[in-house]
Length: 329
Image (cartoon, rainbow, N blue to C red; front, side, top):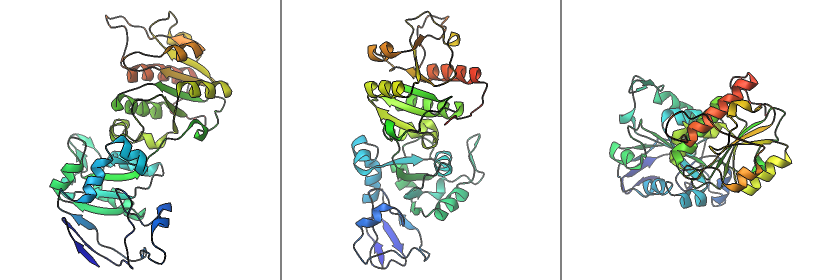
């Protein structure tokens, strides 16, 4: 079978039909049930990559739709762009359904500016081994669907992450949780994930978030660490109750206290909580706190960026525990 419409071309050993999923096609996964009985793809035969040259192709429109939260929630998918982010997702066990590539944007030296990112061809080979469908795009087509400056020619469609509190691992004796309440900016949520991963945090909970875990800018700001951490979404009341049920001390950052974050015991089962960018922690979270702590401020500003605040207190917990990137489970 050969198709060429809307700038798409491809030929391969399809038995009768390609089974399509929103934003991507793959040879594995539970969505196979949507295929008509008796119509299968011969996964054992080699198949040339699909090629899309037109920026108006319908498949690209489905990718653009995944920038919207509603589309992500309906499809159960999101986007991951970039060699480093996709590579980290792979190492965390994520298997993309489809990867869109533009070899014209690949770096022969494996670099992006002054940063060593690795060779895109090596990652592409790993994706093929994992059973990911590869779709090649023209530069014009790729630049239409890319959501970052200076794209490196790799964009993957993956399943969204993030579940409920019940999906989180049971807190161990030295469990460390990061709780963010009402955070609005994807960049801040992503930055906190990156810090949480580096600090060995066991779980990250978004309470009453304005953004969602699948926001591509959360993925980008997290450098892909979103896929390496247990994450959950809940209401503030649900999060507080979960902490109580598991005997986890709640340490909330606020400028309205005299207690410094360095003067509190952050060992054992602890959740460090930060509030929204505009209003900080609300009365419910403050009222549930085991300790309210502040970070010393010697300038004219009375608060720090929420991601910076989380990083400072998390690394005080790391210091007190005498550990380096160790998760307790």
